[in-house]
Image (cartoon, rainbow, N blue to C red):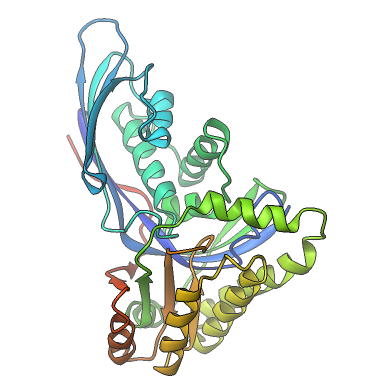
Length: 337
């Protein structure tokens, strides 16, 4: 029986068509790119030796938080992790769990979904029941939307479980099909060189941004807002498969403009300032990641040598360039014993 396991999962950027994967869109399409390093979960299991409720020691160094609890009496300090543990923790065991990520919280990169997918994968690996990527994605989505009643699209969980470049077709929400995009090695190399992600210095609350958009769309037809997003996803996918990065960048810009039209809060003033700087320094594509809002991140498709662009962005003083690179790896076991 496995007693120790370490699992890693990616996050995602440049989610063309994002917002069309929500319940209020009904159906949609998202083209996304997995990047890493994303999140890492390490779980140590020690059987109790007798029947009893499992206990957990949870270490979250990124939050400077460490605490213990019974699996059936969670304190609610990190509800998402506690809900997943209640569902999948082995019975009658002591668990010591460490969750870490170099990605800032509230970055709009699907970090919470990545953590959930990695945690569920680790818990399932402990008892030999590790599920397929699609099942992992669905399990993580259920924790957020059913157990916690949070607003969530489906794309973040897919990216964490699968990695790589994907076109996700949602019809109807929350059902979806995933088309893994086959990219040429030269395209992967160009993306690794030219895709940069900038953290805007403040975490965002994606559920709150969802609520603002839903409120604005109430009583209106969503089709005029969602159609451009779906079209941008199609354009992005076709551009990646053919290796046309100019067209890919245009699809990202179109998706960013379409999501900005959803609500004035989706693309913040600081994000627009960063976009203007990057555009003047040769960027050919950009997109606020995820739900957007105050803070979060923007990803850019820069020139072949993005050094000058990145230096100009860092010159704002508020921004952090994240060390993220495209990855074809989804959630996977790194080590176990």
